[in-house]
Image 1: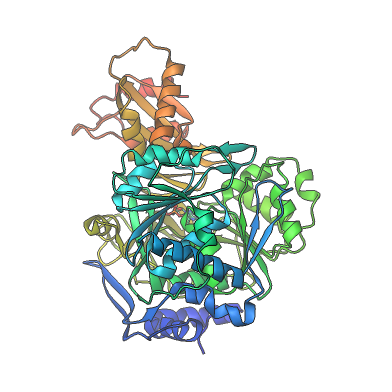
Image 2 (image 1 turned 90 degrees about the vertical axis):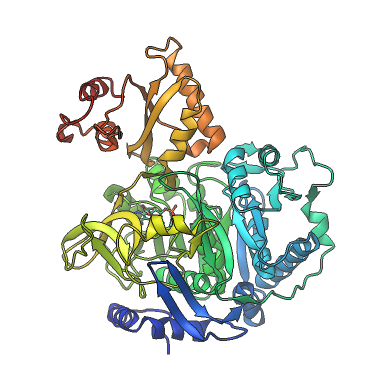
Length: 635
Ligand code: PRX
């Protein structure tokens, strides 16, 4: 018997020890008993972090949609697979059963085939949170196409970069999207992006907001009529375990976004196993993750993980503040949600509202609460625990990354005792290590260092699309024989992990991972700007916000600084998206540099965070006087 569903702490420790001592046996048993294979594997694992090359379940054949849909049809055909809750509460929620999901995925898959999409082709998906989004991922997987979902809040420029990087020939989108009171012209954004994407020959458009959009002859087609004419069965493409399932872009601390490549079997097992344990999902529970499918959280914990377990997964189109700040709780009551998974930034925003928005609703269905994306502060943790969980629902603070594919460190509810702000213990199969600056592993407890993982796990990304060297440099070159996460962490006296934040130039803003370099590149395009540095600083709701230090080409630039600030933020919105806008922009005559010309970001970070009494020695700088000046004019 495999230990697929852990039920108490003693079992956790037994299973964890086994997963470290005999990792291959551990994963082999889970794969064998809980998934559907067309052919079993020849070898569970082979790995070499120095190349890096990792393969799981080599030789196995499968299709992930058979695991997420077909195998449930016999016993769960009429069960709701996806429960779609629209933006407008007066619009009826849609219950898509496993049988209906099967039929709609097959129809969509047939449309893709008709448009010439084949195994291994990349399909860009730029669709809001409507059922077609989840269905399009699964339709790609059905025929072995590699989906590349781009969050539908990204700008045309960011979309174009991603389309071109993975050479997508087809884009799936919608006429627009609803976000609370607003509508967004998604198709317009796609049209603009495609001005620089010559490879895209086909655009399929889902109808959502009934907007009057332009359709380019020979390129754009409405999706619905094509779906109506397509057959509701489609033989799944039989994939190798290591065939890519999808690409998902994440920010890097330098350069263009990294297209993380996830493969079929390992990703399926990782997302399914963690879903079952971290949410303690039981048949007939209703599970809701509030993330967008445009992020890894939505891939793993709205689509693949829940469906692989035959769960009912809620998909919410709207925002927590519409029509008012009670919306999340109204949905919990309405659908009797049992597991609720959201981001600390949302919790902080909700906690600032009148408590009447919470008290109005019956939240007694809740059994498990989750958080993801950034460290949760103690105050937000207690608010969540007291007002939403009524101190009865354990909170699982889940640490993981786009690169890891599934949750790595998290409490198993009702199993692992929780402590606010601690992600607690690694899940079975995950072997964390904390490293000091010299590359030594810090053994024992009560240590603080850089968080690495020292043994492969099935759902880890295998490469960066088109740039394996960058994959090696970013993740496997800082510490020998280790995957480096980019995060700092401490291990307390009982072995619990607390994530302390990024140790590189990535800033987590409202749970979104933003590299500072691409934002600086965007700012530097402004004709008045000479140089810019972006750092994060603590923000009450967003966790972190962005602070920009900017020098202008003409010192004492006569233009109105407020106008310049607006122009700079507009440039960032155009190049990346509104999520990357700066909260504070300080114009300065110089930036602190070392004698070799390197900008001292550490000092700027401290100033932005108002920690000027711990700047350290600045006398060795090339230009120590600018520090005083920057502090004096800090915002
Ligand atoms: O810094 C960590 C933070 O988010 C980063 C990963 O971001 P992304 O790839 O966008 O994936 C987010 C959703 C999985 C991590 O390197 N992070 C994520 N979860 C937590 C966290 N920091 C602290 N606690 C968490 N629970």
